[in-house]
Length: 141
Image 1 (cartoon, rainbow, N blue to C red):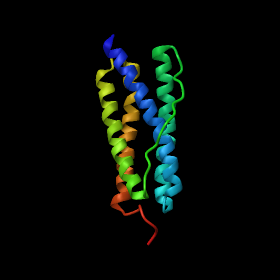
Image 2 (image 1 turned 120 degrees about the horizontal axis):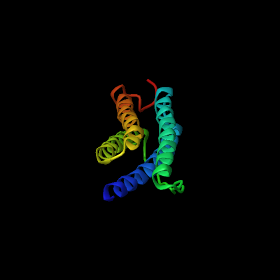
Image 3 (image 1 turned 90 degrees about the vertical axis):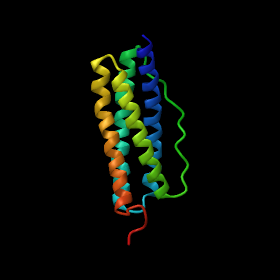
């Protein structure tokens, strides 16, 4: 019973994080210095919207209630490169939390929903690392 409650608590936290990422990535899209950077954040934002929907549905199945909307506070950044670095750290942190949820979950349903979300978060981190690696965080040369 305690594990179930902890999984639900972590899923609620994950939902807030996904909703925050949606807002943050929207900001990053407006700051993007080039099309490649814009596209990277647009694709990740679309995935985060899908993740939020999946977690909302999962929480509704587990608790019998639809989660309430959150008031989210995306990070305040001073430049695009700093935002990319923040996004990488956030994606890695999310993947680690999803790994904990997967390990703790007693039901196949939770594992089946969360495993692909975790994989997406790892892919987002790699995508954003590519922006740094190929120096796509500044104006075109």
